[in-house]
Image (cartoon, rainbow, N blue to C red; front, side, top):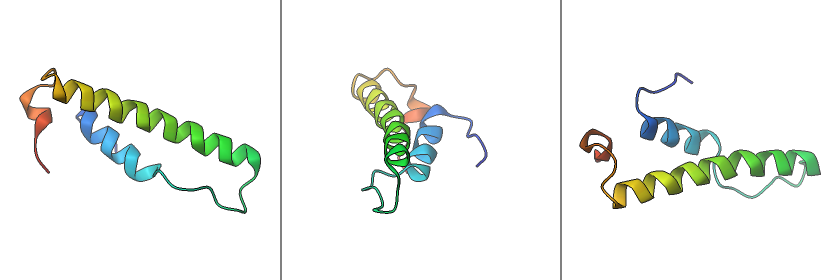
Length: 66
């Protein structure tokens, strides 16, 4: 994965790379917690970016429609 220029694009790439999904039955407990931690970071970034968009704190360029 190439690191995008804009933070919002990076968050979208992370959301695709670490999707919000149920753990596999074959995952160990450690893998489940590790993947949950990865997703927790993505969720926090999504929440922050959504709050900033709603408050108009992101530059107009980052509020682009895709």
